[in-house]
Image (cartoon, rainbow, N blue to C red; front, side, top):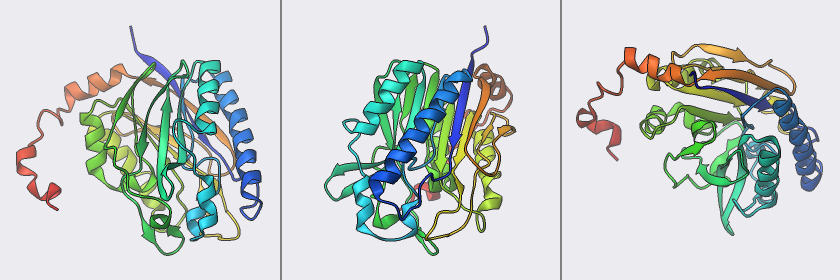
Length: 289
């Protein structure tokens, strides 16, 4: 019997000015996403992933300690608990990208993974942290991830997470595949310009090279006062052959749904034996410090 699961990606525009009070912004985005998760449930989604740092603006466009107030503990913070309630209500796996506080002053760009019964399964912390002009000052906010490349055994299958800038590093995609991932979600905040042409190149290539599904999520709109560029949406699913199956619009909020046949992973791997034919003993330069 085919293992077909219905997956959803949620992309959204900032619902308040980034110059509004931080708690106002956060509550507005939480309220919006509760509604969008409800829409995903109505469309039959069994697993959903939200965009990077979903409950705020992309605040790394500037360096200001006021944004540290968006941090929460995972899993003991209010947003994780809210998402656990929603996961249980909708019998839905939810991947929740958040700004995590580990200790005071030690913060991560992270994502909690919550199973369909509302149980917390664990988290991924963004590994690769950019710091560049214009407007990607992430080392001011985030410590590099230290939890490796976990894969979570969920009600819908084996789920991995990679976050935004991570997507430029093929080593992590491969680690997730070797750890058993069937679906890898990449929640992002990426703008038009330098890397836009890579958006539909790298992630389908990763899906093909590792023969699993990839869900790529990007926010939408332009966020004042920084205006570092247009967050161009176009969230999509790529299948294990690297083909884009479904794509969201460039603008506006959207819930993109696709049916993923997890048996296709076996079918593709029986044709393209990339894991069998690996030669890790020859790859010394890729792990040289």
